[in-house]
Length: 252
Image (cartoon, rainbow, N blue to C red; front, top):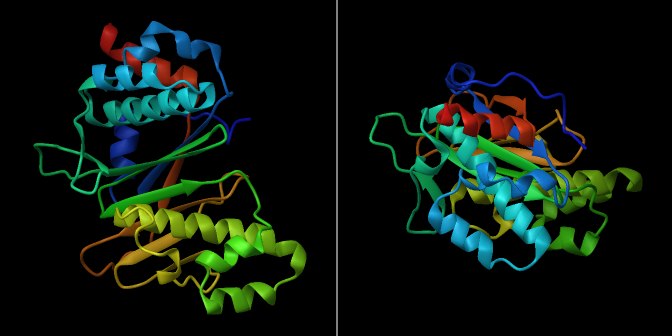
């Protein structure tokens, strides 16, 4: 299942989109795509990542790890014009992957994957977080754990048939917000009250759901200073074949 129609994506387009917008790149893949055994795909990883990949026993987790690393390294290599294994990804003090760039341009990125769906967010305007999920969530017990009293009250006022979709959307917003903060789930999701709104912002935080795909997904941006501009994003859709082409650019 593809999120959308694969489109043209190149370095110039990425750089232009990042001038005022957040780039979100989507892909989907089979549980065990045959072309992942291609040595060319593995060449996009660092030696440390290949070692980690070989240590993963579960087939689904192995595929998820590999496709996730391919997405991050191939898209960032396109943006930075450098071979995928040389993209300077490091972990900060909180264990969050970040780019260590010598230039004045400060890109931030975040990855999410769920059941064969993949979403990468890139921003040069504050910290970005993204989340994608499989579908509606009808577990009200779970909803009570991460929703505020205001959100739960408004949720119960909605028609019962609409609640599952809204719960899933609000979950993706809060998860994306948490990832933008870089604290994982150490900050309770109830600390963010969305009011069940799918797009809004506070002084230093913005969020919106992604409406270009069928499954629940959201993007959030957190800045160290007050945000004046409205959050805008530019979606791209890629295939594994396109990621493979990005790798071959540096072998010619």
